[in-house]
Image 1 (cartoon, rainbow, N blue to C red):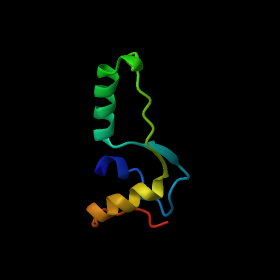
Image 2: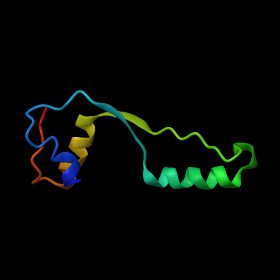
Image 3: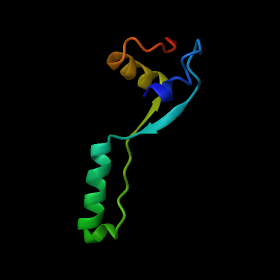
Amino acid sequence: MRSLFSLYAELETFPGIIDKFVDVRDVSNAHIQAFEKASASGRYCLVGKLGHISEIVKIVHEHYPTLHLPER
């Protein structure tokens, strides 16, 4: 986490990034479903959530309050 957010440590504002996020448990379940369900033909569409970088920074700040990150 620190290496990822060290990119933002010196910034005063968030970059305007919207990215895709998914829970790793959902990914592992999707792999199992794609393997076990014949109708999936080895494929399974997995869609998580789109989110602004500010949402991620807020979550990281809750877990690492001493890490300096932009506030807006």
